Image 1 (cartoon, one colour):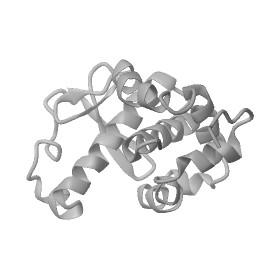
Image 2 (image 1 turned 90 degrees about the vertical axis):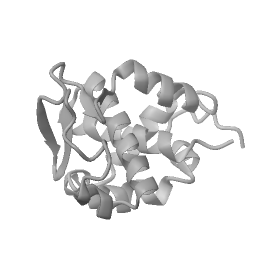
Image 3 (image 1 turned 180 degrees about the vertical axis):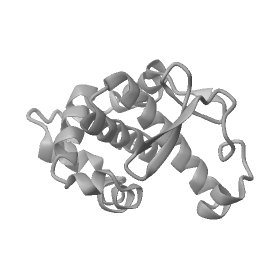
Image 4 (image 1 turned 135 degrees about the horizontal axis):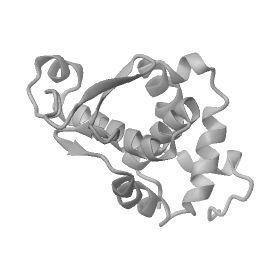
Length: 161
């Protein structure tokens, strides 16, 4: 069993937000939001559709109050301060259900979270602030083998050999 790409993206995006902004609840919302966005972009052909506004994920959500930037990456924010995509607010409990519970089928979430924070800390802040560099240099190399990140960066790797 391996941790899925969706969960790896959400975990790394949440850890990225947390390292840069320090807010755990909003980090969970951001992580889930970005994972949903990238999954949608992959299914619909990416940049071509993002600029065309062809999907409800590419239009301004009605529940959006403002846009927040994390470096050069922008995401819509609801009046409650949580992130929103496609008129769906990504709540911390949604992250727990869609990300934490699935990771915990493989390894305790706290172990994966600690490893993600340590892994991200090895990159310059400029990489964490760049959407493209984050995707290319941080996520892409580990998306199919995040277990190696856990083995390398956690104090107590409880992964099966």
